[in-house]
Image (cartoon, rainbow, N blue to C red; front, side):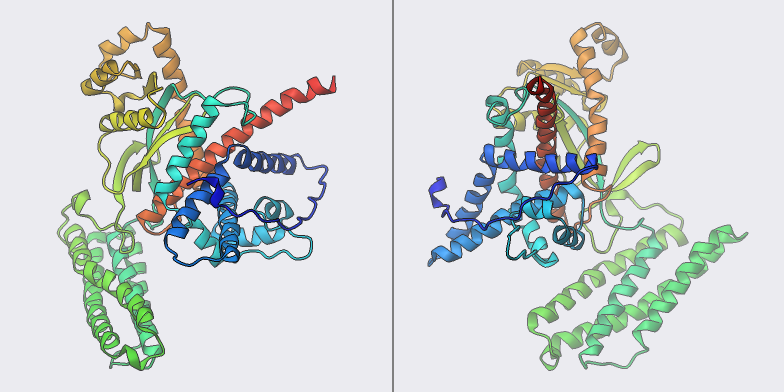
Length: 495
């Protein structure tokens, strides 16, 4: 849809940014935001986001007024800029709302600065902003930004055109927001969730004869402490088995009480102050745990009482996050991780040009290479000419496929003989040296933009967050390229 659907309106007069001296870190941060602001405008990316959102929004409405569309455009613009700023800062919704209220610079960037009154979005509004665009709409816009940087670098004031002819691939695990998946801790989680739900139901006047729900939480916590301290005793195995049997009996009682209260709420919800959707929210919370509880109990018995391992594909890692997996990394300090696999492909300038986030267990790295190359060729009109990666991506199928597509194979071969033969090529050695830097790019994504662990609940939300991280990361890299060019030009202008 053309840009004509956007209704132009006069923006509010913003406050003048204060002049801050003596703090180079603030000046760099301010320049970075201003460069990102310029990139959003010069590339047309902000306009494309607004058009994409308006196309979807208008399709859901039969009658429309100009003031309603202007108001939606205003929130759409704020949503884009708040998402970018919050991802840059690595803040949660509440923390970012506080930072936004306290910073004239962020207010200016997010387009909420006004002379007369500054109205800052609440944490709930910022959460809605986070889910303003679906992942499928954000991804093509990232590709368009990269293609524009390669075709028209002068339009974005970049020192050089973006290189889309070479790619360097690596995989990592993005950890999910769960505690370490200990079997007996799952029983504690189930007890706490079910008894807190029972407390809510009893607070609405629906009661059945039972002990106070708080007593079950205290008892399971006490048993967890006993289990924790059993390891340093001489008969630790016997103590662990004894404690688990006590936990198992307790969780059986908890399950019976929770099922009775669940049915009580389902039948008599109209006697409470809740609406039916509010009651169903509590019912879903209880059903999710009650459905998994028998399997969690069996898993704990099998591992602790019988001493038998459980296959990774059959393990319950969390009662609340079902789309996470055991990812075997075999690295120092992280033999295994619990989360989802992320594939990243970057170019020579450090921009992410392809990525994939896997809901199911990811296939071997060698199976991912062809998929990634296909996506990049489709997105950038088959510009790819060289690929570099570690030996995990090597296979005979990939060697043949890259040769057929005319793409230089810079993947480290598994065979020692092939590695010795290829080490004589300067191009292969150059690609391998550059490929090593991709480890650092993975570290930036995990530690700089996702704080080491994804906060979002549910795979769909984590997938959307990964897409925003890729967009913000690329804007961050482009802004740094513009900053370096501006600093290089400053002495020449002074002379």
